Length: 433
Image: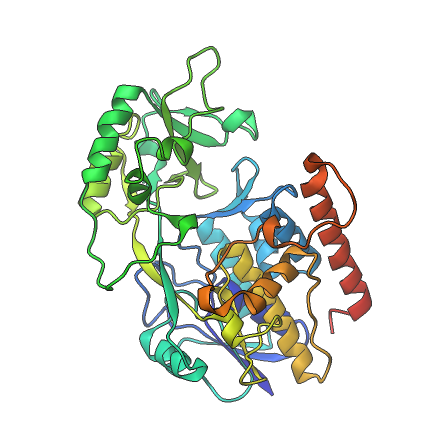
């Protein structure tokens, strides 16, 4: 008996590892070598296409809590992220290529994992995990739509441009982390009020690429910066261009600051923080080169916008990521209705773990609702069907704390309760079976 896993993205790779470590054979299908989506550029697995950041690594943030839970549960992808992290203040950011290459090598050399470079156009019979991601190819997407009995939901996601480090003018830009948290990990390009005003006017009038679909739904967490700008003159100043905590010592605070984050370990590439965009390539170059310090910026990868496909999770799957219509079918990753890199990894881990237990006749494991992983699973299984939308992990979906506490203690208590819950379920459920 083997499990077919369709898609070698973050979720599919994590699921494959979790199954193989439990002595379950895996056939991992990936079509990138034959047919890449518009957002993909690497041939290797677990490609980070939007940003190289897995967000905060602090336990005062739900994403940081989820990462620590994944470490406790022996996540291959968190191991890779920790091995190939690059400086990013309190965030966990990685060298995309080394991260991807490591995961690919680990799966390729595993004796229980067979890699098949083929496109799958319909849901396979037998045990299967669908982890094809937000850009599921049309043939399989149509078969999934037919299977779940309703239209796929969707929103649009955007990718930020990446700049060659040597093309940044460091006589104008400077290294600093906000409030000096971290080792001055970000490159900062400051603007005065006149520079920002001129630049802002060009941004809101810049030409965007055409969208073919009738209606464009944009995920708030990855809003194109030009769309944010159109909401008002100050919107970017309270968002990605926020200058607070980024002033040079002894100097006046800039009116606006564009930040760039290291994108690889060699420090040869930097991505522009919060600059997910749908501008045409020529307009991206023009707008970026108006920023002080980036006048001669060489853009290695332009930003693009792409459609994200996902199922209506509370209609289609349960808290185990298992189909409600077919017991041997699981969904994982952004296709399953989760949002974000870390969240996709978590869904793959839970789907892989529970598929293994399903095949062995063991009880499926419901991850503790007090944990970040469990609260995410509970949300996608029980959110209102008529208004379901993907959501990053956050303390707002954690159960309320029962004990009295001060507001400033709340996040720390959430984190400790979550990690204690994960420790307990590992102990109680012999989770490596």
